[in-house]
Length: 384
Ligand SMILES: C[S@@+](CC[C@H](N)C(=O)[O-])C[C@H]1O[C@@H](n2cnc3c(N)ncnc32)[C@H](O)[C@@H]1O
Image (tube, rainbow, N blue to C red; front, side, top):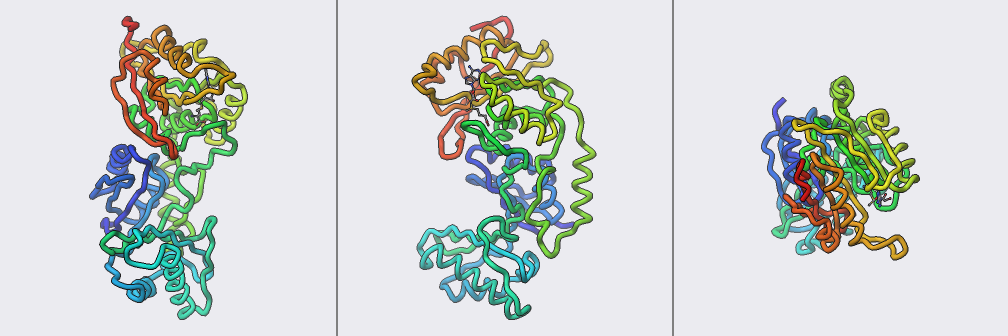
């Protein structure tokens, strides 16, 4: 099929390039990385495939119209003339999300209301029944983005729930990392499953689950449903084929994966997370302090990979965060030769105490918190 759909995949700041690389691998064309979004071209089958397979996007939007609306009536007329029946059943539910710089129309609430009215009026005219508005889990999420110059970009969200909702998470520990961020960190670190992997401070197990799913070639969307499955033009045969292909590809990882945490409750939560993700049998979990952990063996040819999200702060009674980061550096030097270590942290003062040269420092966002992702090469025989 020709790639006649214009797609936009929002992502987290700093993950645009890894997302663009994923899209290329999954068969998208005309890929272009923007700020917290990557756009590309595709067809409906690719939309299904991206929702199932992409690890570093938050959702898959399909652009269905672009136009300049000089005034509110023009906006209403254009929206009412749009063919909504393709995406929404007359008795379905919708929600309108608006991004507007506030220069052209009254306010975002008003635009959302006007969009809803245009859609509802279209359905009432044709079917004598109308869709309802639902904020939580509507059948169709509509995105209207208005630029500073009054250009309107109208998109529908094919994903439904955000793609970070893999379906394996129930309980979390204290500061769980977003699944999309965890997958993005692993992609930045170059993880493909072809080397031993360890998260020694695994918390609720998000990084481990994402790593095990990469190593076992599990598509991240196998455990959940998507918005497009509720569209009137949904093609269950095409979707079934794409899902079957993904299921058939699953394999046992060739190298060990290990997770540890000093807190027994974190290990219990990680076990439940990995079990729901169907990867528990691939991961060895240990209740252990980082200093006491013995890494899986590595060789000259195959180095190991450690990716972790240590605490950024510590409560006074549990100790001194700078001393803790110094102990991470000391442990790297003593026990982790032959590994590449990556730490994500929002504490630049403490990170200096690791005391090793960083070979990369990548700015990312962990929710609202500015963080950096630090790379350490822990060479053999050169405990520096
Ligand atoms: C920020 S949380 C990790 C969150 C995790 N990435 C997630 O998504 O749930 C940091 C974890 O480090 C653990 N931790 C703190 N000190 C530790 C130590 N010395 N050795 C091992 N784990 C430690 C804590 O118990 C906590 O679970």
